[in-house]
Image (cartoon, rainbow, N blue to C red; front, side):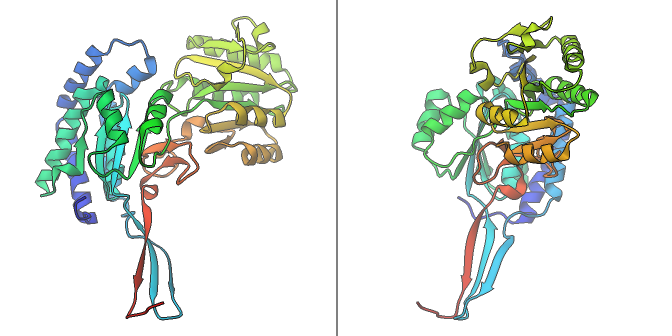
Length: 398
């Protein structure tokens, strides 16, 4: 890898990218139109992620601006002490080195995730899906222009235009150094990367998020929460797929019937367990397998649960470890639920749609990790570093 870029160099590239992306809006959208026209699949979530419009470009520019103004995450002192023998010991944050980002359909990853990795001093390898090739290459061209104009080698941001077999071969035996891999996509992509990678992988992207409506829930709050989580953005990994309703909720029928009517307005397919399937407009389910599934579609499963402990058990059994919500006015129950549910983000009376690096104060995200090492949940600029020991002596020996 090249000598580490200082923070002024990194910021200069990001600031130049702000200008270039703004200037080349129409060129990016035109390249994306080629991808959209070639995309023939019926996967609504994939299609939503693939599309680039003026609003998405505004988001790319905002991300770059915010990154360029954030503090340098590299070289931050985490710990220091003076050894008994006079050595001065420091532990500081350090770049990983080279990060490979493998992703499906989302051209904005070529800006936002790459920008976060670059700001944290890493060389970037990008492997986008074939469905977004024209969009990705148009954006990478801008990265190279920004690097060249700042007298920096273009291999700091490199695009790997590989097919599946070439990608597998690279994962198993990389032809250049790779220190960390971040897959951004569905479970098939994540499993493929985990199976073949020969270096550390941060697992991200799988949702299958639950909302538990406790017996002391505000029903209007619950209704609005579920609607927002399910219908606001179906392609998001923080969307809601499962709802558990406490059997002891007063006037439970009112909530269930109102929820069915509200979801039907959005053409959401509603499935239910043995109890909920008895309501009009709800299809029955067979077996437990569906409780494991992330839908990324206008589809939801609603079930009845006896109490909060059963809700916790069910969520810990079936969820993707991403986000879980409890709707209740009982603070003690909420506290127990939030401490006991094994998810990266837990919510009390708020939407799972806030599991996002920008919304949670990170200024953006590389990914949302469902792993527990080294960072859980949204991975922001300050998390995309490792650490390094610096020891200054004057001839000490042990």
